Image (cartoon, rainbow, N blue to C red; front, side):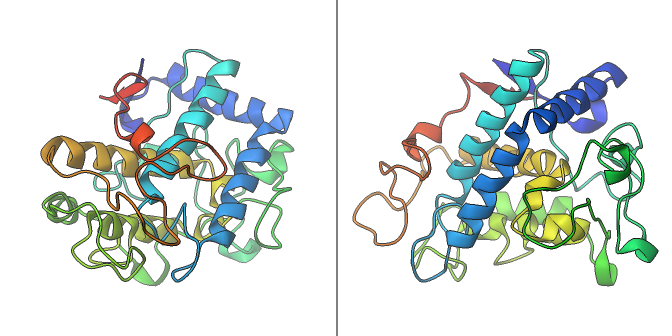
Length: 272
């Protein structure tokens, strides 16, 4: 069982091991397969037809499975590696998260917000975006466009107080829905707001091309885990007979894994 830590608490060796494992997956071509999976799923999800990975109840279990598969791939490179989480309520643009020896810095406006330093800059020769959802073959970031702010601790507290996992019509318009508030179409817009705050590559379907994607989604998953512990009587909805979305015992494409399979992660990992 792995322990997923706050990225701010990682030792220099842990940071280096994570970066090196990500780069190894990129060299092998496996990283791009994960990007392709996300692009295909995001492009296939729609508010009023089939929706699995986004705009739907299965947003959280789908990404939990996706994170687990990616973490296992990293561990095939280096068994010591576990995914850390980025607590965006305490770590903004001045965080060591963006150090040149970790996730790398913000992009540069004069070069179309290209990230020009760090291990994931295209100039290193190790991070060309070959599977992507836009025309840029380099990592782009443009922090806080229009003065956008990251979610706050108060936003998280409000989110965790919602008592129902999800509500009809099971899409981006759902009200009083923990899933929809966390995904970001209602309330403070947590998950979506962070993607848009980083901007650039993170703002599109090819967002896993920015390795901070995994740390961001680890935090999303952590908040779901906290909500599960706070509301043990509230579980995944819907349970059966719902068109266009994944019921609790239906498989989540492209896997045979169901949302029920993803409800308890304690045997696989825990959060520090």
